[in-house]
Length: 204
Image 1: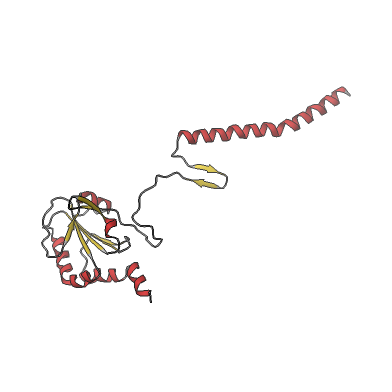
Image 2: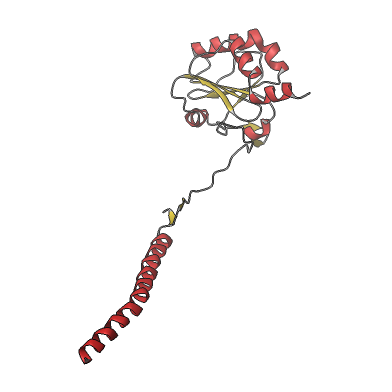
């Protein structure tokens, strides 16, 4: 009889302590996870049903929801100051990448721009050039901004060839990127089809 009572007491004691032991075990497990995350802040914080990844914040040049591919920043010297791409927001920008001013594709692109420049300038087009090897004068009467660190600018745009061309919309979106010259008409068509231009045309 005493055995039965003792067995019942053990049974009830085990039933009462079971949840308590489980709670203590969960507490130590969660404490271990929190400690590991504090030691390594780059790890993801995982909770039930959610995963929040800690990533470093990066500066952006535009916050509009329609910007699909924000153009990498470039800079140039303006007087005694360094100017950045964000200062040209509101105008389309054409950037030419070339190793030298003697590059055949570069010269061909300049001729294409010259043949349509009156129409392109009416859209407020700003032209810039990034020399990746030898900085030289641009053989054209079209005004060009010469970028600082041309090699770094080309790398930022993924240009590994001796020539490249990038067309940026007035909103800062990278509308076109090519390693071959574009016809003047093609550039004009791309500018007309940009998001910002289409938005202006849709407004009454």
